[in-house]
Structure formats: structure tokens, C-alpha cells
Image 1 (spheres, rainbow, N blue to C red):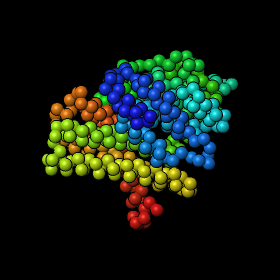
Image 2: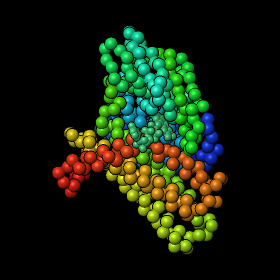
Image 3: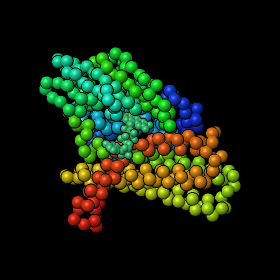
Image 4: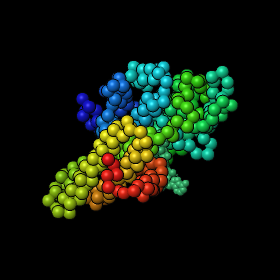
Length: 365
Ligand SMILES: Cc1cc2nc3c(=O)[nH]c(=O)nc-3n(C[C@H](O)[C@H](O)[C@H](O)COP(=O)(O)OP(=O)(O)OC[C@H]3O[C@@H](n4cnc5c(N)ncnc54)[C@H](O)[C@@H]3O)c2cc1C
């Protein structure tokens, strides 16, 4: 069933590769297959392993990177609810996912006119301002957005989850979205000005959104989706060379070999980063180690994706990079989706951490 699901998503990818499109059918299939609620643990006794969530994200990314991007936002929102929601909020939002198949997302990115959350008193709040790069845009039922809380009692960067059908319509600016790739992620600009929410819609305390290691450690999830894209590039390249009968050439063999071990080393990074996160989170003072290790995995996977695309281009040549061959789209999508926040700061953070240690043996034990 699930293999067929991923196959269907893959086959539909070219059909929704347009600005303004959203993978509606894909999320219906995924909801029907139980993929919207399956990262929510039934009991705290049996937490979901991070490595298994990463594998899931990678498979969706392999099928279609835009679907993977939106799905990653959904899973990120559920994780933030799990971390910072009170008991009644968890029951409420998790029921909305499991029973009502509501789709969540996290929209934090903004430009000059970002979000302000004005405290109106008596448990009511009014939003003002816009978010950019809102993947899923108006198709998302429960966007988790962040903004500056303006209140006499408390201030900081506040999370809230907007119950879209219960508030004034959120203005959508799709003209913002003229991307190089990832068209079907529908990452529009959204104007929340005038939207009113209540105390129960606020998630966590101000500034908890940036709490470490969860904030930086979350980068491993987009790296998983990206690696799915690199896997798809390998698979399409191998298929293309077989189709042309160019499999005996030593240069092609050498390139395919390099692509294969690069992708497999990406799998090792994901697996190790997932397992380390689950183990280290139980230890005190482990936040920095988790952030640095995740940063290494994310950086290595970005390099792997870039190199795999480069080798693929050499393998298939110009005619392999033309529609209807899917490599044309996957290259655009992956190149664009590799642009994620703070790559330089992540790299220098790793270097600074290592230079701060007395010695470099056994850094990760
Ligand atoms: C397809 C797609 C979907 C997305 N969906 C969402 C979403 O649903 N929700 C959401 O919140 N966000 C989303 N985003 C936004 C994303 O999380 C990042 O914020 C965004 O991609 C970063 O873009 P950038 O490379 O232009 O960033 P920049 O921060 O401008 O980085 C560009 C380069 O400048 C460097 N740099 C950064 N800061 C400085 C500085 N102060 N001085 C000098 N150099 C600097 C960086 O290291 C990098 O090398 C999405 C992005 C994409 C591509």
C-alpha cells in the first residue's frame, strides 16, 4: 500500500509542477494512509524514534520534494505541540489531526512587515502583519505562526496556532511565489492583519520557539527530505543510463559509484543523527552537542545533494535534463530547497565547538 502511495505521488509530480498548484490529491492519499498522525506517539512510554521519522520524510521527499516540504512543516508543528502544548491543547490538536485529518504547518519566516500579536485583554489577541514562504498557504488548516507579543504582562517571540475556519479569512498573496523550483509547495505570502485569536490558541511561552536543541536540531528533518531528492536523482540517473544502454562505460560506472556511496553516507548521517538525538536528549547539558551533530549532518547532506546533482548532470547530459525527463524538475526543486536558514552560521558553529574542546578524540561519545 505505502509503496504504491509513493509511486502515485511520484507519477503525479510533473502534473502539479506549476506556480499556484498545491498537492491536494497527495495529501488526501497520505491522510487516507494514516501518514498525518503517525508521528504522534500513543503513549510517552513508547516514543517514536527520530530515525524512523527521518526515513519517512526521506521517502516522501524522494517521491516529490514539494510534498516533502509541506509534510515536514506538518510534522514540525506536531513536534512543537508535543514539546510546548498543555495537556488539553495536545488532546485537542492531536484529535484534530487523527480524527479530522487537519493539516498543520510552521510559518516563521517573515520580511519587514512581520507579525505582531496584540494583547486585547480578557484572553483575546489581534494579529498584525505578514509571513513569507508559507508552504501550503491557504490549504493549511492549522498554521503555527510566530510573532512579537505586544502585551503589558509578557513579551517575546510567541507561537500561536490559527484555527483558520473560525477566524476572518487570511489574505493570500500568491504573486509573491515566482520560484526557481518547489512550485507545488505553494509557499505564498499570507497577511494575518485583523485576525483575532484566543488564549487557547497560544502555544508555549514567549521565546520557547527558539529553545535549543529543538530549534537548530530540527534542521535534520529538512535534510531528510533533501536526501530523498538526492535518492530520486540517483534512481532517475541509473534508469536513464540503463535505458540508453550506457552501463559498460567506466566513467559512467565511476560516477554512479560515487553517487551511490554519497547517498548511502547521507543515510548513515540521518540514522546516526536521529539515534544520537534520542540518546543525548536524556542527558543533561547535551543541547550543544545535539545542535552541532545535527548541523554536521545537515551540512554534509547539503554537500551530498549538490555533488549528486553535479554527477547526474554529467551522466545524463543535456537531453537527460529536458522535460518530460523528471531530472529537470528534481534538479530545480532540490537546488531551491537546499536554500535553508543559516548555512554559514551552522558551519562556523561546528568549527567553534570543536576548537573549544580540549581534544578531538571521542568528540561524540
Ligand atoms: C521551498 C521553500 C519553502 C519554505 N517554506 C517555509 C515555511 O513553510 N515556513 C517558514 O517559516 N519558512 C519557509 N521557508 C523559508 C526558509 O526556512 C528559509 O528562511 C529561507 O529559505 C532562507 O532563505 P535564504 O537562503 O534566502 O536566506 P538568507 O538567510 O538570506 O541566506 C542566504 C545566505 O546569506 C547568509 N547569511 C544569512 N544571514 C546573514 C547575515 N546577517 N550576513 C551575511 N550573510 C548572511 C546565509 O548563511 C546564506 O549563505 C521556505 C523556503 C523554501 C526555499
